[in-house]
Image (cartoon, rainbow, N blue to C red):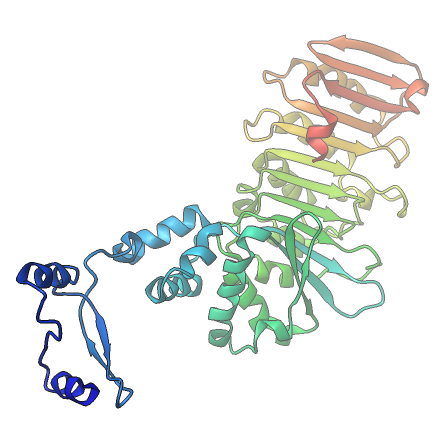
Length: 394
């Protein structure tokens, strides 16, 4: 019987072995298969299968979507990437193409450059939320060959963080690492808006390689930038060009290093007039030199402080220069006390500078709390009532 059935199958004929089946049963069985359905028929004797190339009657709805629409869905919900990729071979191909070519997914939440003590390299640390890690890693796998690089796992260290994020670290040792920087720039994506930290403690007097950081961050608009003990020089000026600063919500300088800016006033003006929130904290342990405060004199600071609050862009400012003795002389103390409370706009400001103030004063004028003298360790402190320390320092 098996040989006979096989013969009919090979000849492409169908034999109903149960003659008792009526036509209605036959119609019912055949109606379960649409004319476009795919069926595999196995020959039990020869162990081969004959496939009828047919389409399913009901398709998975997402598989029929245009690729552009699928990419838009992944732009909005990148965490769905691993799930969509696992649904079918077609969806896997679409998802891989998205990882290989799209530049609109917001993945990276933090980019951190560190100069290590006693080491001749920079350590770049990129943080990605755990739900988006699968897409970021697929992006690296799909793109590394086009940059002439080995598998990312060979030069990138991956660590799971306690906060649910995933940390990726790689070292930059020489200019030969240029393709590596371009590769990581392509994987970060232009829509990520990461928090960027440049940290150079232990750098001593060596220049921070801002050109390297600029190559990694090319075309990327960060949400915030924190510069911790980095030297203030012309390379930093280029990195923080006016066009870049307009895209940052928050810029923070901590432990200001000495300045070698060619045009310090221009740098200060661009910083304060193009950023929404600025924090500047002078050094507490470096050399007591005016160069550690952007290399600007008190007159330039006073003029800029008054002028910058006439711009709508800047909303919050914390400015601390408490370590440099009598940074502001009495003339500029009086000027700030007289001008700031009467500006046409109310800004969230806290200004504290070492100043030439011999007698105590403490009063409120137009929502500004103004005080100074021996009771404040010879500091001039001007603070608007809307200022919030926690907000400005985050």
